[in-house]
Length: 342
Ligand code: 13P
Ligand code: SF4
Image (cartoon, rainbow, N blue to C red; front, side, top):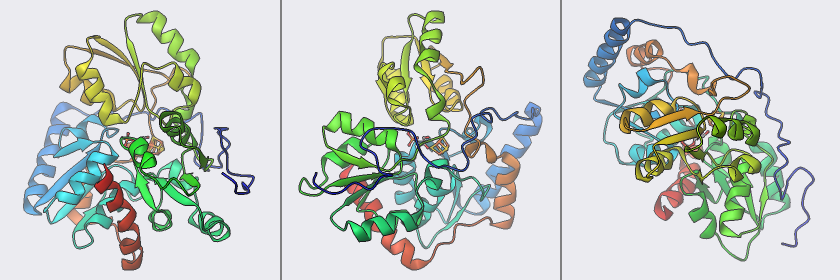
């Protein structure tokens, strides 16, 4: 690739991002404990609202178990985008983080998309300001930009194609061979895709503050306790962690992998709330979340959503995703390209 590489882009992971929200000490959010009756009452109210508004509830695998249990669909970013693309519900209550709800809106500009907490962001999204990407593209119009779905809608408008962790290798493999590829914003996912596809790429130096705190040493310690367990890690983890895993995949593929393995025990190297779905769907197996410095690995953004905020969102029909029509039109093309390719 014979382009001059701006200093801040990397060819190999350095984890030198500039995400403002990275706070290594805030990894476990103390969860208030509610009675079973309290939870059931709220879930019943959410179901009543859902019927009244002819709504669908989409939830990411990292949502707390009380939210997963009341959702119509629980899945990874790819599954959620597909569900959002095919729904004919009038209202989508999206329980995940902002960029996911925005993707649902972009695919359904005429539907109402509400979310429990408008401040549920994503540190990967923060790592890639659209203005910087725009400037880089102006200097290097030859770049073919593949963006991980964990980015802002504006960054999507500047991208040639979007990918998720569930299809990134396929999307990159299908990218033009005669153009340098820039992968934004996650350098770890990008480096994993380079390993898998053999395609060279420039990597935006973004990273997830949760996944980059897992260590290969913690995996080794956990394996001593559970020697027969298979290790499953998310590709947002660093290379040493990925190398220590038996399988690296998206959250949805983690469910399929654990379902199809003869092993009965699994060490799960991603956000802890996915364990609920794994235990629910595969009750015969045992799952151990990999701790970070002794704490449960939680995403503070995903944890912002609660049952009470879901009720409030249905009640007030807000917070609502509202994006300029021009942004939605431009951002839709690379998302649709992804859906066609995957
Ligand atoms: P998945 O698409 O694999 O669920 O990942 C989303 C995410 O934000 C991981 O941190
Ligand atoms: Fe973003 Fe990381 Fe949270 Fe996923 S786990 S939503 S990448 S901050």
